[in-house]
Image (cartoon, rainbow, N blue to C red):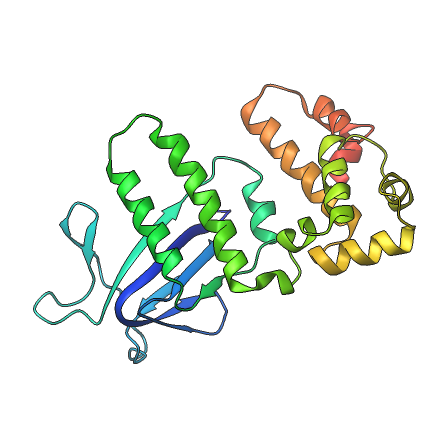
Length: 249
């Protein structure tokens, strides 16, 4: 997928080694929780790294929602509860770019309980199931990031924790077609140009105009895929005077 796979998991027993894209391997043990907003390549292995090249193991379904990796005649080295979620929104790629590559939380029973509740809701057949699951996944993302202390690193959550930067983000979302400049945005947020630029960049990891470009492209992709609006009309809606100016952007 162009957006990558978003998944989460909690280790119930034992331990494992998780490699995500080009990042250092993560050792996960019982009680550990991991959240990955967008993974393009990952490998789950035993604590002892497998010989290279490692053989891929096909999961064997033992029961509904219960899968086994590895030899069935040997004890399992790890038991984990894992889930994944997919967003139908074109905002997903922009959101993923503003979140940490992954979040690991050690020994937080609260998150393990949350994952268990998600599993129960997913397997049940109750009214409002889709709505409840969507809200539970949102809360799980927020709780994981809150518990991990990743607000100390640049990203969307850290930006939204600052009232003025959050206001700037809301303004860009509400009026993407406006001829924004950092000066104009700073004035609307009651900050100096330099203060807004530095604060926005330090907290989100993106410049204000860089964020605006990403938001405009996100809206354009959504309208192109979901509506019959022409490229010229889309260009006007997101602040470009012509289709040619939009194509250059």
